[in-house]
Amino acid sequence: DIQMTQSPSTLSASVGDRVTITCRASQSISSWLAWYQQKPGKAPKLLIYKASSLESGVPSRFSGSGSGTEFTLTISSLQPDDFATYYCQQYNTWTFGQGTKVEIK
Amino acid sequence: QVQLVESGGGLVKPGGSLRLSCAASGFTFSDYYMSWIRQAPGKGLEWVSYISSSSSYTNYADSVKGRFTISRDNAKNSLYLQMNSLRAEDTAVYYCARERSIAVAGDAFDIWGQGTMVTVSS
Image (cartoon, rainbow over all chains, first blue to last red; front, side, top):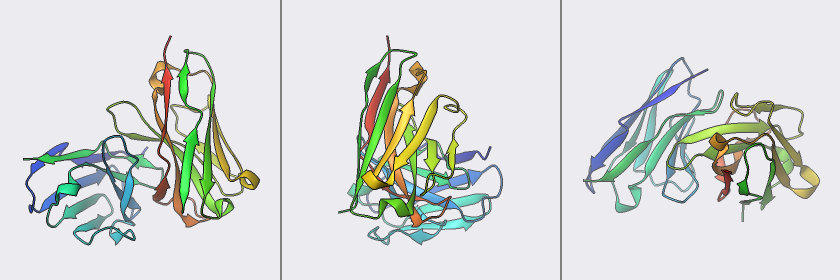
């Protein structure tokens, strides 16, 4: 099974900060990676697919990069609405990372 | 608008059964692969099962294989998850979700339902 490891588990940041979350796959997944944002009590929301493609309607401050086994999600300037938990997911076999909580510093 | 609405969750005793439903609207349901994903309280996301657009292919996480059955009725725009031999560790919010590409296996999930809570406890 392909394992997905996110880091860090928790990230404290301020509005306006540049934030980067890393996701590593236990084996190559090409670019078959998605990023989701989830707020408490809500369903996840797709942000990025195919490692770097921005989902329609998602603000351009979100970007994704990487291929193979190492991937990053970057928020260029953190906004109040961005405090949430972020998950990566490989969709060869649909494994999710354990999540990264972005909290207010 | 494009929407998925789950129902059927509730409290069930260990060893019991439950059937979840997911009603789709606003898109051509029969074109898309669909999945169930769950989230235990305070935990991360776990993919549970998928079904192809025509029901020809299904797949399950090892944790539910042999106990859960996914199905769909394209005429009714509905997805189902029959859950048998339920365990305490199956307690979770269950989401149905649509894969973003038509008739493709293995894609990101672009549409999610609001979730339905399943609690397995005596």
